[in-house]
Length: 165
Ligand SMILES: CC(C)(COP(=O)(O)OP(=O)(O)OC[C@H]1O[C@@H](n2cnc3c(N)ncnc32)[C@H](O)[C@@H]1OP(=O)(O)O)[C@@H](O)C(=O)NCCC(=O)NCCS
Image (cartoon, rainbow, N blue to C red; front, side, top):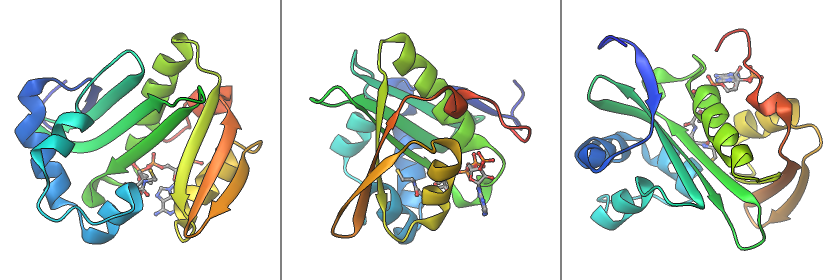
């Protein structure tokens, strides 16, 4: 991989400063779409949590050279469902990065035995809701205030490469 290509890999502690810069550089609106809150000054504990890889928590980064341009996390909750969260830098969107990040995570989660996904999305996040409906048509949504939670079987279509990816 050269310095101009975006690669997908697991984080290490050496990524701490780059992940902090990535989060701090997101617009308030993007922070809200991903974390359901603005992040203010990004806390070191949040950064530590977002790069922590554990048996029930998989994390991948999209990186261009030393810069982090995307982050995705899959955490298995107490009900056994895999909760997915993903965010890509504004200037790197619509070129398949989130799809690559999620494909990598879902493969890891499936290999670890997961068979259900849980997706928390703001009601106003039409792009992501449309994406889920296209890719995971069996998703069942429940509304709680401003948030929709989608429950879906872990579906092979989600890990299938789209022509653009
Ligand atoms: C949602 C998000 C991660 C997508 O990142 P991305 O790298 O642009 O996504 P991709 O390029 O892989 O595209 C994913 C899908 O959305 C579609 N898409 C992406 N940008 C689009 C746009 N501007 N208009 C229409 N469709 C679009 C793609 O066609 C693709 O659909 P497909 O799989 O059916 O082909 C990014 O917009 C983001 O960071 N949003 C804020 C955080 C957020 O909402 N996270 C989700 C809740 S955890």
